[in-house]
Image 1 (spheres, rainbow, N blue to C red):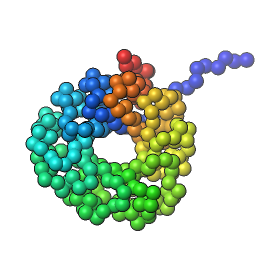
Image 2: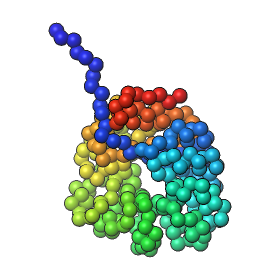
Image 3: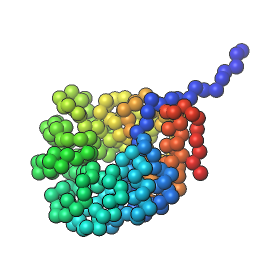
Image 4: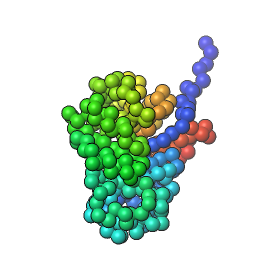
Length: 261
């Protein structure tokens, strides 16, 4: 009987990921996560991030720092050394006093519940780079989907569970750039099934400790999917996420697995 060789390594055509973390995460942990293939989303309690963290945010492909009105001069000043770092805002913040003090940088805006025309109008006027909408159980109607699809920039519907039952109807709706659906809180096998069932699923929440081989198979079978990892303020989870991203990137480059200490 012929001997079988080692199993073939699952190669990836590319990788684009998102990492969410809190302002308390140490700068060295942020350094491990920083890479061009990754977008950083920094949650803040104080509207401020340490200068050492801002320097490392510039090493991500994109980065957004959560800021809330009322805005002070210091909130914009902290980001002056990293003009590419954007502001992650909430509903109504684009119309708040002091918004101009944040400078000409990319905006990301999170909306919650029923869509309000004034929020969509403000996003269109500001040319928002990414609009994230978390609808309530009864808010995601076909009409609301169509209105959200007309918004500028990247659009993401943050869905708490598996694939919404109306996915097929939304996929047929005419939109020049249809929103992506972000799902989470599922096992990797279930995420793979959801991505296969709905062509709009393009963001998936995965734990920092996810099985690399299983995640690689998911991303290989659905190249449009972008994983989202949340490490909070945990250095241990940040290191685990960095190792996972290192190994996934190695599958893109074909140079073998790298190690993150």
